[in-house]
Length: 298
Image (cartoon, rainbow, N blue to C red; front, side):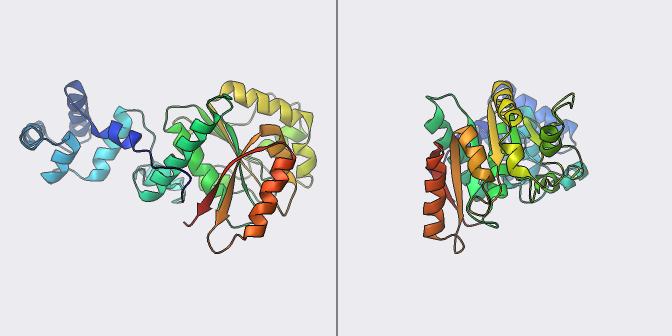
């Protein structure tokens, strides 16, 4: 999975600890029962002798697991991850940016995010449609992980499910799949508030599709949806839109015309060149800027 060079900024930021930062990290590990004050002193001495980061020294001494350090660091730097707390069992393992934030897939997602930020810097429009030609190429997987990666930048992020035909974001994030969502919001304009699940993961809010709609294209063509898009852009630093298969339904083209930026998703050994060429042509026809194509091999 790639779109640009890897961005190691987040990892570097979480691994450089000096002075008061080391003290705070040590305090967190002591309070969590992972290290004793005596062990903290041993780690600090080992760190000094060998020129390591505190994390590297603690692991080298065999005193703490990498997972425990990751949890402590994420809390210290307000960097959202999904740890093994029983409360987090509801989150799908597909959310690799949260479950395995420094694994190869998460690194690739962050690389894509960095390329998107760079390509839209001049327009100040950090709203993106994630579109695939056919079902099963990983559109929802990419949209969910991309949105979480934006939240890890401490950027208030909204993930919007515009696939009103076969929604599954609720399942991925452990949300009520029978709850009120975008479909109800567009059908019943009298709703007093947008039914967004705020900070499902710190910094990441989600508007699910709600109930399956018999007329999704008409709802997405409505003025009410256009008004929502403007509201979302004013309230969030980044907005990611998951869409239905674009060559099977016109919904993705409708949403892309409103948003103006799209990332295409292809799956290795599944997507064809002709499908991707047709998808790109369709979106460009509606004046949508196609920012790139992600080859999803996961």
